[in-house]
Image 1 (cartoon, helix red, strand yellow):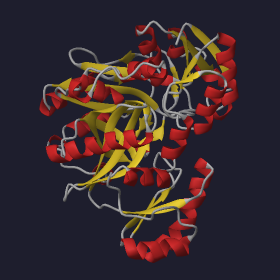
Image 2 (tube, rainbow, N blue to C red):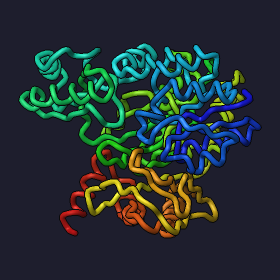
Image 3 (spheres, helix red, strand yellow):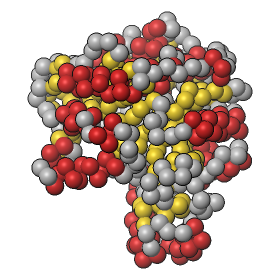
Length: 451
């Protein structure tokens, strides 16, 4: 691997370019018109425009990205997260062009990207799954029949879904019949596939994911992350490791994640996601993300392993450089996603120009961002400005550093969620780790009523 094209933008493009530079790999940045002067274009050795500002006309156009790779002599493509990162067709197109795709094979992406198929793989590997339909259900009548055997409440989920779209929680048959068509239509518009399946809905669930690395023959886990603090099924705060599971559950869950990787011959970095019943501590496989995750820095801070660098080494043909006993965890890390959104206006995105920017730093604080003074936040993409990540010898120390780091974060010109995140850190239930996937939304609703 001599020259890497980064098929993404924002903080993840910056992150990948820096990892490649550490390894002595040349880099190519691609950009839309809106990102012509963005940080990632200046950090890369070469930058190529690939189209107008909307992602549908630039970052989502595989042909433009492959053309940029050919023109610049790139021999590898890293998709980052989002955009084309989990499209099997893109991975296949990269391989067909004679380039290295930094990620799993197209067949693995396709297999694990279909949530129904992924559940079957999990069962074959002996990994516990949430009780539900073995495959997709064709219509509301079939869904209602299945729900009667599963038991309410149930969750309607899009087989090809992600990002919280195409999901409905229903508590009775009337609600299921009313929601089925809407969820299927939403899934078809978002993913091109309206297939739905059913799962038992765990009322008090934690969302815990296991970071894995595989080289096609060997696989290891890098422990787990707690991702239960969510709004509209989008993660807001993540921790490594989870403060809400027992050591026995941790061992069982990480062992299951590695078994799943071995079942599919997994290559590259990936994340195996689980629901944990907060009352019984039962855990169930829900899906696998076949890419680097937004929250990967928390794992890097507790293990000392550069996940993006390992992705690049594996893609270049190197075997895993360590076995499971070599992976140790130390301390506790927490990540806060700071977005250009106004919490006072129902988290409406706030694009526009910024002036002064103060980013947190100092001992054991990491800030992954694309943001600079006098930059412009474009209206075309995700509103993520920065990831503030802190490490502590234990969770209490990490929370203390969180207060300092979020107090330091300041952006002039637009509202951000930094102040809300700082407020969240002081909540007693956060300190006690007494939360599940519905807690944050309940807190936000109560906060809004008392405003």
